[in-house]
Amino acid sequence: MKLKITGITFKYASEPILKNVTMELGKREILGLIGPNGAGKSTLIKCIDKILKPLGGSILLDGQEIRKMTRREIAKHIGYVPQTSSGCFPATVFDTVLMGRYPRTGWGSSDRDIEKVAEVMELLKIERFALRNFNTLSGGEKQKVMLARALAQEPKVLLLDEPTSNLDIKHQLEVMEVIRDIVRYKGISAVVAIHDLNLAARYADKLVMLHKGGIFAGGYPESVLTYENIKKIYGVEAEVKKGPYGLYVLPLKPASYSAVMENRVFTSVE
Amino acid sequence: MGSESVSKTVLKEQYTKFIGKKILFIVVLVIFLILLMGFAATLGSASITMKEVYIAILRRLLPNFAISKPLEAELSDIIVWRLRLPRIMLGVTAGMGLATAGTVMQAILRNPLASPFTLGIASAASFGATLAIILGIGFGFAGGTLVVANAFIFTMLASIIIFTLANYKGATPGMMILIGIALSFTFSASTSLLQFFGDPEEVAGVVFWMFGCLGRASWSNVTVISLVLLICMSYLIWKSKEFNVLNAGDETAKSLGVNVEQLRLVSMLVASFVTAVIICFTGIIGFIGLVCPHICRMLIGGDNRFLLPASCLLGAVVLLGADTVARTIISPVIIPVGIMTSFFGGPLFFYLLMRKREEYW
Image (cartoon, rainbow over all chains, first blue to last red; front, side, top):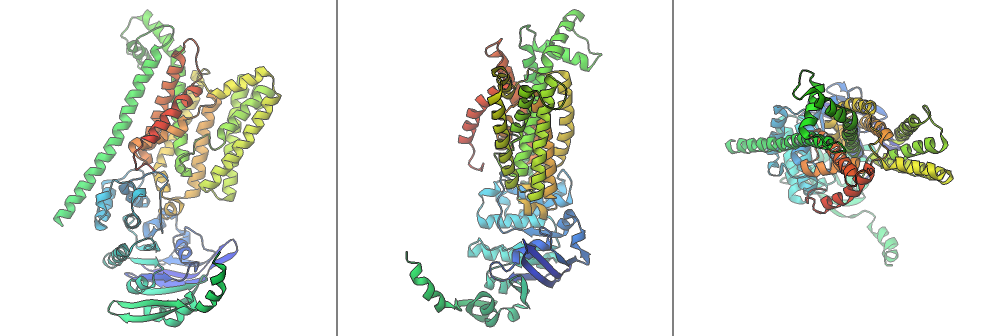
C-alpha cells in the first residue's frame, strides 16, 4: 500500500490551514508529523481520511483517488485513531472495538467479526476489560481500545492523531511500540501526528515538519531534527544528540527568553 | 499461543452470554406485553376473563378457531374488538412509536435529554391544535380532523425547519438542539397568546388536548399508526448499527464509513414523522420518549440493535400500563394518560438515577 499526497490545501473560514502539502508513504513505514500547535497536523490527518474535505490536490491510495471513494470504501483501507474520545452513552469495550468491523459487514456481526475483535483485543492485551464501559477507562487504556478499533478495520494505513498526548511515559512507550510492531509485522503504513520530538525521532522512519500549514522540512529524522530547524519552527534552542536509541532532543530555552521575561514578569504579578 | 487462545475463547463466550441476556430481556418484554394487553382487555364495566379475551382475539385472527359457544363468543367479540382493543392498540402503538423516536433522537443527537419534546416538536403540535380549536383555522376539514391535521402538519413543519436550518448551518447535535429549543419557545409563546385571547371553553379544550389521552382511539387511527411504525421501525433498526458508531463521535463515525450528516437528518425526519402521526391522535404524552430508552440502556446497555426493540416494547408496556391504571383507579373517571405517565414516571426515573450503576455515565 502506498499513500501519495500531492498539493493538499485546506481552509477553515478563509483561514488557510494547509498549503500545498505533498508527501509520500510506503509500506512498513511510519511517517511522523511534527510541528508546533496549529501547524496543521490534525487537519492533514483528517484530510487524508476525508473527514475534512481538502480544497485542492490529490490523495492517492495505491493509485486510487480518495476523493472518489465512498466513506465505507475508505474505511476498509484507512483506520483513524482520534486524539481522545468519549461516547455520550455507555458502550462496552468489546462493542467499541466491534465498531471497527462496521465498514466490512452489514447489520449483524458474523463469527468472523467476533473472532477478529477478540484477536485484536488479545494483541493489545485489553481483553480483561472487554465488558467494561469505555468511558470509565484511563487515557492509556482508551488509546489502546481506539487503536484496537482501527485495527479491527484491517486497514492498510493507520492514521494516529497524537496517540501519546494524554499518556504517562510507560503508556507512551507501550503505544508507540505496539504501533511500530503492527506496522512491521502486518506490512501496513502509519501516519502519526506527534508532539514529543524524542518519540518522533525514535519511532518514525521519516518525519515531516509542518509549519503554518506548509511543509518546512521532510526526510529522515537526522535531516529534519536539527538545531536550526527546531529553533526556527518551535522558537526553542535545543541540543540534538545521537544516542544508542537514535536521536534525542533536549530543549534548553526559548530562543527569545530574555525578551519574554522583560515584558511579562511584572504584569503577571497581580 | 495455547493460553492466548484460551483467553480468546473465554472472551467470545463472555460476549455471546452478554448478547443472550439482551435477547432474553426482549423476549420477556414481549411476553409481558401480551399478558398486559390481555389483562387490560378484561377491565371495564362488563367483566370478562383473560381466557375469553384471548379466545375472542384468536377467533378473528384464525377463523377456523372455534372453542366457545357462538352467543357468548359474540358478546366478548364485541367487547374486545369493538370497545377495548382499539384503545389498547393505540396505547401499544403510541408507546412503541414515542419510545422509538426518543431512542433515535438521543442516539443521533448524542444527548441524554433529547426526546420528541425537547426538539420543539410537541410545542409545534400544541400550537397546531390550538390554532384549530381556538381560531378554527387550519388544514383539513372542520371539527376533529382539523385538530388532527393541524397538529400533524405543524409537527412536520417544526422538523422541516430544524432539518433545513441544521442542513444550512451544519447538522451538529448542539446546533439541532438549540434550534429545537428556539422553536419550542416560539411555538409555546404563540400558543399562550392564542389561549390568552380564547374563550374559557376553547382554552379548556386546548388544555385537555395537551393532556394527552387514548380516548380518541379507533381502528382507523391504530391502522395508520401501525403502518407508519412498521415502515419507520424497519428503517431505524436497519440503521441501528450506524447509531452505535455515531456514539463514538462524528469524526470517528465518518472514519468508520458512516455518512454522518445524512444519517442524522434522515433519522431525525423519520423519528419526527412517527411522533407527529402519534401525537396528532393522542395529544402530548411526555416521559415515554425520554425515559424508556434510559431505563433500557441501564438494563441492557447501549447497543442500539437491541436497545431500539427493547425500548420500543417498554414504551408499549409503560403507556398501556399507565392507561390501564388511569382508567380504573377512580373509575368511571378516566384520567388522561399523559398526566399519569409524567406523574409516576418522574419519581420512578428519579429513583433509577439515584440507584444507577456507577458505570452509567
